[in-house]
Length: 415
Image (cartoon, rainbow, N blue to C red):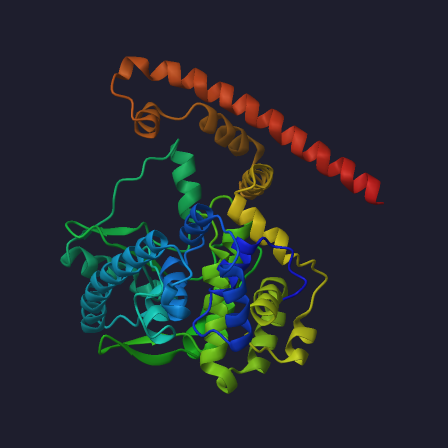
């Protein structure tokens, strides 16, 4: 890791983003802790990167945290126990949902955090979860909705700019609208695929189902992906969040730690040949290679060299740049992603007329949407917000032209 050009604060976050600290990494951490550090920055980034509980856990094991300011350790400790309590509540609810689904004959695969916290991290306090993600077969969606309704879950009303926006959103989704518990405010997301229809990276979800493995979560039987399929899912998920402005902000330290710990946990049982074949068949080599490469190089997860060579694509991986973009919330990068994502989605809409309707609807959405979006108390004031929205659209359009002119100019110079 000598080649990293990260600050001491960022390197400390990186080194603590793993379950087990090697002697080499421990020495590096101890060395950094003797420096003068910006602990406010570190605390903020540990939250934004989704590693605060793990960060606390590792710091507390290195000299009992004596080289860390006491107020910082107290703050991190509170975050850890708060996350532990929250996850206990999530798992309690998850067990009820799994029991109900099993009783209704619904095969269920537990995705991401709900599986990782217990199955990989072995300590539910170490891996934050915002919600519970479950995968069911498309034929079981209605049964799943009925069972969740019985358990006091409801789907919050979602207001779209126009009816066309709603139709487009439904056609592009691979999940049902979120279900929220009436009293506990726990959110459950039901998926029938791991990739949305508009994604450039496709997978055959039936293959994932065919190789799924039985597990027990809180003594309730469920399913999880085979190890190599877990890796594909995690790599695709991270790639989506890093490169899409529509998704919540990426948490690369947490997500790369997930990938690395899955590799370490399953070790020799990963079917690398199956992973390579599936990646090649579905043309998803780029996100899979990037995820494995970075987990191998920066998170001490051993990936056979021949696997990386066979997956390798013409892709530039600049980990330091990616790391800093996410931490610093680079505004130019976000604007670029906004432009690319909007135009990509617009391209998916059939017909020039429908494209124009979508653009017009984004600038001048329904009155109901405006009231909801801007929390307008007096309906008579709604028209003022239309002027604000029009001005924002003009500025956004000018920024889009600027972004693309810069991109075109750079591309011309590089030729």
